[in-house]
Length: 211
Image (cartoon, rainbow, N blue to C red):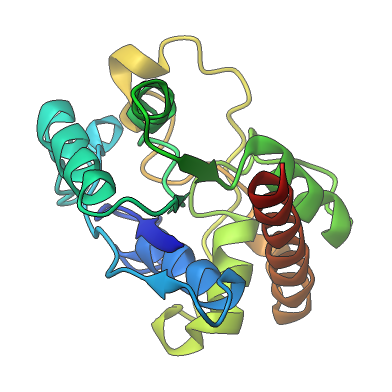
C-alpha cells in the first residue's frame, strides 16, 4: 500500500509556517503506515485560493492539482491512502470518488469524524469548524512534531463561526489569516490529538483493507 501526504503553501496566522498542512500530513503518514507500506513524498502545494490577498500563498489550478494526484494514483496498481491536511483541497472528495468508480482503490483521510474525535479527546470546547485555520489543533500538533517551527508569540483567538460568503470572499472576508483558538494550544493537547488521529486513521485503514 502507498500513502500520499498532501498539504499546502499558505500563511498560517503568522505563528506557524507556510507548510504547516504539509508537515501535519507528512507526520501522520509517517506514524500511521505499516512497515511494509511506502510513504510517497508529500505534495507541498494545493488549492489555496481562499487565501488570496493574504501573504504569499501558492495555489495550483484545480485541473493541475487533480491531474497530479490522478497520475500518482495511476502510477502503480496497489491501493493508496491519501492523507490530506488542507481543508481547501475540497476537490479531492470528488476526485477520489471518480478514481474509485474507474477501478482505482483510493482512501481519503482524515475525515471530519477523525478530526472531531481528536478535538473531543483534547477536551476543547470547540471543533474543527470554529478552529479551521492556524488555531489550537494546528499549533498543538506542530508543538509536538515541529516545535522549532512554531513562533513563541501566540496571536489572539479569532471567532468567525458564520461564513456564508466564504467561497466568494475567502479568508480575507472574515479574518487577516486565522480562524480559531491558538491560545488553547499546548504540547499535551498535541500529544492527545496526535494519538487520537493515528489510532482512528489506522483503524479506518484496517477496516478498509479487510472490508
